[in-house]
Amino acid sequence: PATMRGINKAVILATGHAAGTDDDLDWAAIARTGQPVVVYMGMANLPLISAALLDGGLAPSTPAAVIVAATTPQERTVVATLATIAEEAAAAGLASPALIVVGGIVAMRAALAGQA
Image (cartoon, rainbow, N blue to C red):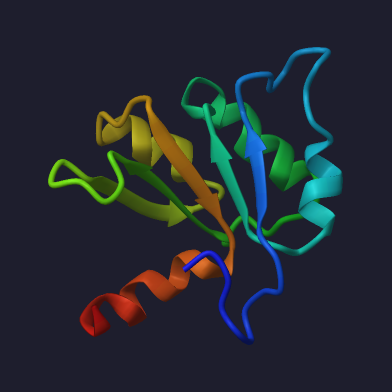
């Protein structure tokens, strides 16, 4: 879920295609909100995005996921920590288009898997 009582009160949707450029977002400000972040168009910049969120104050252990082809039979998901998500996604061969999800809501995936 994008939001879950007791976990978060909002979710931030952000584009990741400009990461590392002059047109980049203020990832530190996003990190300071403490709210989950869903990044679209960010796979090419996943290492930069995760590093910027870590530099902004998110813990290395923050749950993170990359989801390719969400809600289709071809869906593939990698769940890791913010510190390792770029490496794990690359090792799994995940590529665009994909969503990058960062925050406590990622940890709810396993807990809710049996309730669908």
